[in-house]
Length: 171
Ligand SMILES: CC(C)(COP(=O)(O)OP(=O)(O)OC[C@H]1O[C@@H](n2cnc3c(N)ncnc32)[C@H](O)[C@@H]1OP(=O)(O)O)[C@@H](O)C(=O)NCCC(=O)NCCS
Image 1 (cartoon, rainbow, N blue to C red):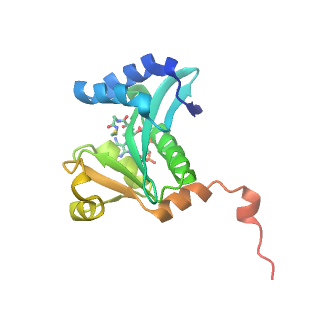
Image 2: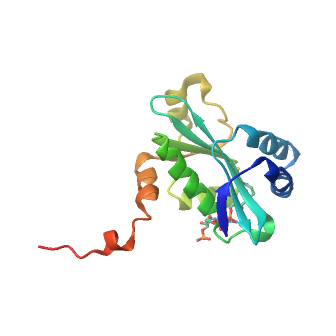
Image 3: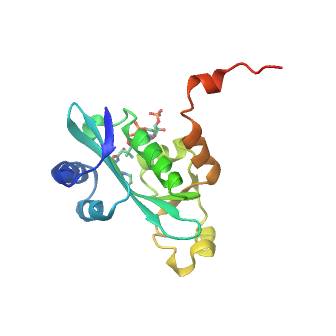
């Protein structure tokens, strides 16, 4: 598996995966969204792009990250590609100063809900979204999932070298 930033020539692969993953409307927005995505990440297996993630970073003190779309080719699901992509996006968002990262998940999308929960995202009560973002709390029909600061820190520092993690403590 190779994880890398998406490029303009990944368009056909992203379109293929989006069409196999979403209904027509969502697939349209996923394809269009890649142009302004930051980060745009793709995962390759044997030289073929089989998964992608589109993120957005909203300005603000501090900035807020948003996992806009993540999709894995159906033939490659449950191989941890979704997890790897979201984890990398959390690192990227945190490096750019975000202390919160959101994802919008359709309530009946068990796979997506499972993925974000497995990574430490928590469901956000709708009242909290309105309080934080007022009328701009879009997508209230979706379940909003939040990765709080401690989750971002955990994912950022989870890949410490074994030496620094396992070093025996000295008296
Ligand atoms: C959601 C999606 C991206 C998950 O990708 P994936 O590569 O299959 O997921 P992973 O293998 O990384 O799974 C990570 C965790 O997510 C959860 N999960 C993944 N698929 C699941 C499913 N079908 N049901 C329940 N939990 C699931 C599990 O907790 C899993 O951990 P485990 O394998 O140790 O049990 C994929 O199912 C997909 O592309 N769905 C269609 C597009 C979509 O709905 N995207 C999300 C909204 S933008």
